[in-house]
Image 1 (cartoon, rainbow, N blue to C red):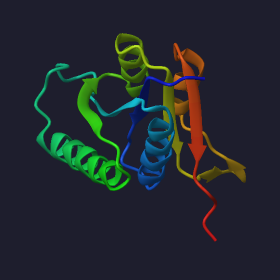
Image 2 (tube, one colour):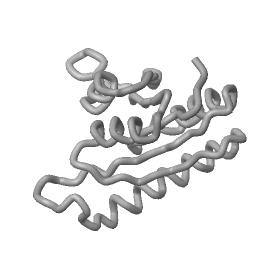
Image 3 (cartoon, helix red, strand yellow):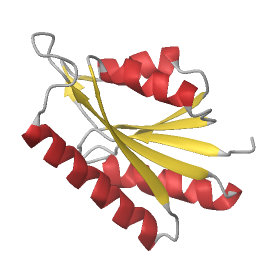
Length: 142
């Protein structure tokens, strides 16, 4: 598969740096463009364009950290902060609008009721994405 554009949604979890490294490695090999996004989910009782300062500051810090990690690996990335009702829908729409070839999703290692848990956003992106999806699951902590 020849990659031209890779989308990396960041959620602010411990797996984010690993996901950026995976995307940067793939991008470097194929000279692809990397776009990192963070989606602020806006509650239904607020307008979609509501000013959410703490969430915006957190999102900008996440994207700045992603930029630093990518630059250490010799890859330049574009970043975008989005506001939406549902993160999965915003990720899918962004992938479609930007002609993305691959979405690299991070899955922190979580267990619920003795089973590995996959978050709803990951499931929805996996099912609804218009392109290939690579899910990177974090290792179990020992």
